Length: 160
Image: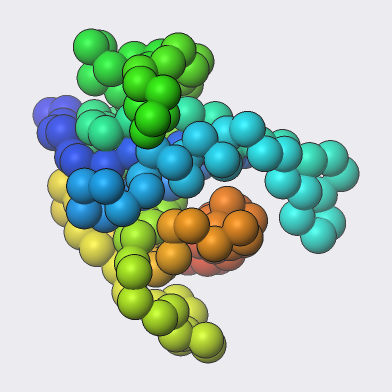
């Protein structure tokens, strides 16, 4: 079986073995949101303990199709690094191999209060991925991503 792969602009984080691609224009807060997510333990209702996200990649993400999954990793030159605006490039351990389950599009506009679910999807390398919109600098943004990821994972497992 041929392996498809490609790079995409965006920062990727993972939680409980599933990845989230954060997209948005330059300067909108992708790295800042990822930094808050990887440093903030999150415990959703029904979870036994709190867990932060883990960094997969900052700025660029490598996508590879393997065994029917769209796997995420960091390009070699960016591995274990994250940009912290006002500080510079700092070390941050990365993980690789988490399948992509969710895309978060960062927006400056007002977010719809009660969007349809499942809602929007985007095709990456031929695979449909759920998409949600998040305002990057809301205090609850990392928690909203964790909730959307949990919903996306549940949706995926029901579909298979």
